[in-house]
Image 1: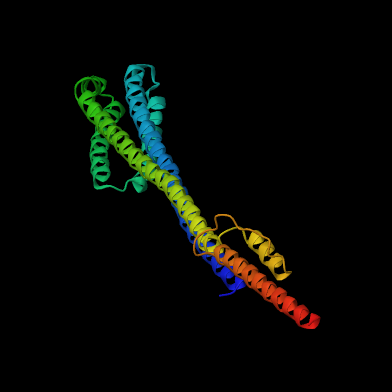
Image 2 (image 1 turned 135 degrees about the vertical axis):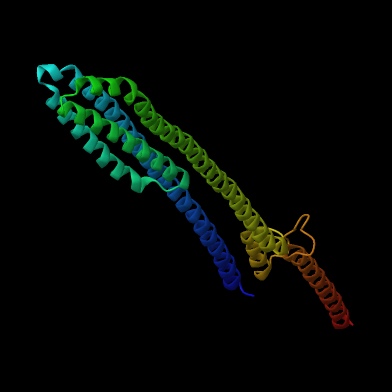
Length: 282
């Protein structure tokens, strides 16, 4: 395997791992984004429910006040003004209920809404009865029904709204806790996975470097310089404590063997030269 192919494999492997890690992290961040969006939408829906139910409760109380004022001002001829306000408030409650119903998803919410509707029907019925008595001029009976029959129906209606609001508050807290738990899990997953991936990258880098440098027994530049000197005939280089079974170790052995061979050649040459001189002198 040549240098270029080894480098290509290492780079390709690291790029593949980085792409996988990035994809996983992006997915986790997307899930976190979706969860946070879900929390925002949930908050909007719950706040809308709270606001609408509070408006119903306020209108119920205003109806009671205007109906009582209609009785008190009947003899002064001002009752029609208050009766008109009662009818307007009643219509507003109908519009609010129409807006509220599509927001209800759970069976429990729908059951509570049915109770609100039943209480509302009874409330409208007693209002109509009192208004009818006023229109007939029967102030005494109207006042009696307002004092004795109206209050428990009114309280029943208010209780139905309060039960709905209490349920929504409880449901809201449970939903928020659940989403907070999901967000916490995603945050922890992102943090721990990031640490895990960093460790993996460090490990890959370490073992890659080890796989490259251990066979060399040193820095590539150092190995290159030593082999360059040997190629130029410099055999005086000494390699101290080379890594066992590495290029540096075998290069040191090669330099020693070459030095020994050259020394033996020189010794042989000196011997031959001395013998030649001796022959020439005889």
